[in-house]
Length: 387
Image (cartoon, rainbow, N blue to C red; front, side):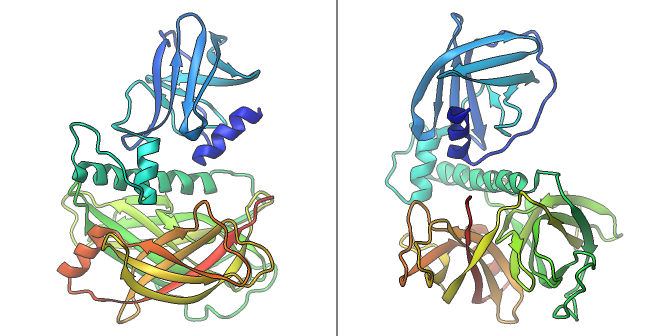
């Protein structure tokens, strides 16, 4: 299955299962599309041949057959089963994003250039504003998929949930080794931001969390409830919009963000939030990396960013370097939390680098309209350990 595993890594996705195959005509083009961006395509020809194209791997040729309630696509001797439901083909165990008939408005090569700051050509019939809106929605949905990937495995040894609506006063007190795996919320805040593309009002909840037990655990999800004026739950979310290190040693801290759409007619909403700690064998561990400086600044496109300076004090190159940065106002309230990465590069021992972590333009508008002045940045950096 090496070929299929390589394809999986290209888009960093896991999968979900779907029901059995129906009697349909499966020939023709199929597209793996996320928020109007086609990440892969597959053409099933009537003669039993298939053309599969994903990201930078180019076109791979193979064969396909149907029967026994499934479609089997075989490339270089490796077979992968797809099931069909509601006009979608899903490869259970590999791709959580199904293949559909409709092609996205832009492809993975173009979104890659946009995300990396490279020059790109605007497709005919589209505007720059439409392109940026697609890119924004793609990143939102893609991060949600990654968050679901991180928390989708249900094989756990211990799972305990705690609900905290205000910062914990005794957060620094260590728990006994056999105590419940409580997740302490050191700081939290919610803001309501209007999306400039969809014009929906969205609630963003930010929290700084800490492991105050004596057991290392992972925090991949939780529960965020948006409440109306009567205390009724009007929206909820379990997976993070963005977050930092999911693996927390005793005493370690991280940031996390939930996002939900605010239903029409709901005014002055409140919230309840909790985080779930898990001890498991499959969790990906990470190492803390030194952050030597933070500031608010601009990138070369004059976008507001959080500048996080990271130093490599190890004896080896930092390969999978990541950071999570939190923007705070003058009173120390969390007003934005998001992630940053060192993509396709390595940081040599004894060297430093500045990671630019974007702040959403809609958040910038929210700050201006509500007389909120971003004052400082707090950030954590870490390197994921890949076995």
